Image 1 (cartoon, one colour):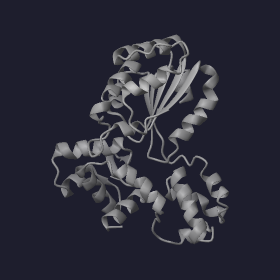
Image 2 (cartoon, rainbow, N blue to C red):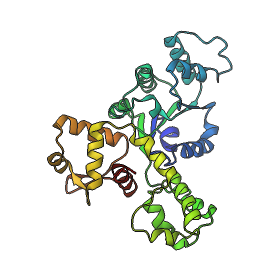
Image 3 (tube, rainbow, N blue to C red):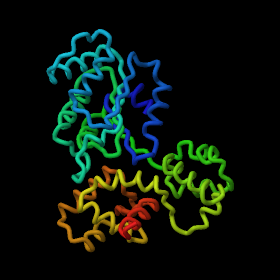
Length: 310
């Protein structure tokens, strides 16, 4: 990302990853590395789904010259774009997925948040010297469209980074260090998932990773289940059907195999698979020009456990 911002002058970057993977942590590390290259660095959370009008007002208040902030939305956008052109600014908007509808195709904005889509398109299309980073658990539809035709729009998917994973296990004073890599792989290198699991190992397995790994199936702590609930409560009924089917499979399957089992129209199937991809809930691999879909071990265990009624 550092090269995209400093060398390629990327103006709009979507940093994507399932909850807990380390998007915010990576962004904060990036800020430390490149902060001397910017006049302004502004971080805003969208956790409580603020309207674009509210977000723009908050952003504009960071510029000391802005004594009179317009009440008109279009004027606010123009004011901010002027600052992005006048100064080198790095703006981070976190938790973008909170602007999207729950129970609908991924990346679809709530009615009161639809103006954000226009705002992001303007950021991508207008000339300026700044960069906007969007942290999200779901890929915005407009980002997928913009990055195909605009070289200054990029997206980065975080997966299995293991950011500080060993340090987390060390902080919990867990034993059997030779088994740590196995534990980290099982929990996909997700720092938050590993934190939850390390706490469980401390409490129930005498801090022994080896004892924990003797259990044949993936163990989900209550905290980890609550974390996964945040992702799965947002999916559509058709996506749920696909997820449940993938959880029952012992190996990756093709689109044709899914189609043969589920009674979905071709349109519904393709749209749902695309939506699950944007939610970053699928493991996808290419082999001999064929695409295969599966769930990682943690998500598979979660889905099966949920279907069994917990």
